[in-house]
Length: 185
Image (cartoon, rainbow, N blue to C red; front, side, top):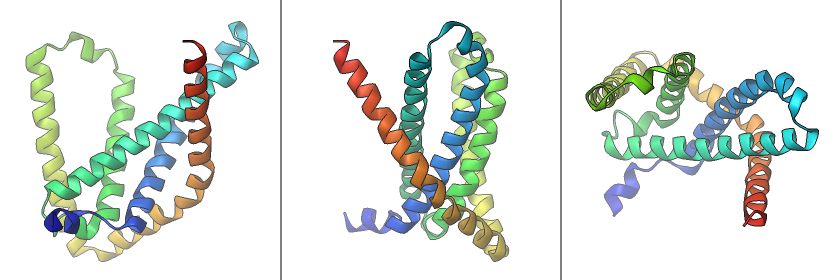
């Protein structure tokens, strides 16, 4: 138990990474939602648009929490010298890479429909191998370039300001989702 506890990041590190995740996830979700709003105005009421917006920010908060869990899992699985000692900078850079990957995936969202089990298995194995290579190469890079590590940590800490707005919005969205779904039963 003590060994597991020693691999977990500190609370302030978790807050910095969660703030970065919240900023990225909420900004992307709201950006994508605003592309839909003009078409929604033709067939939805303002009330419906507000309900949909609550679902968007509620799910963005859940997605951010899942990503934080994934980063903590990486901290547990990888050796301390490669991940935990550089948790904030590592997680921030991995989140940026995953965000770019998710954006590219959204551009080609139909490709998964045509994949069979073999292609999906190959993709998952390639993702795990790429993630391991990324963690090791970033760790090596941060050992050589301490300024880059410091810059990423500063960016991550400054994202905390946005979490003061986004997290309450996400909680409100979750409350609205829960309220609406309980009333529909």
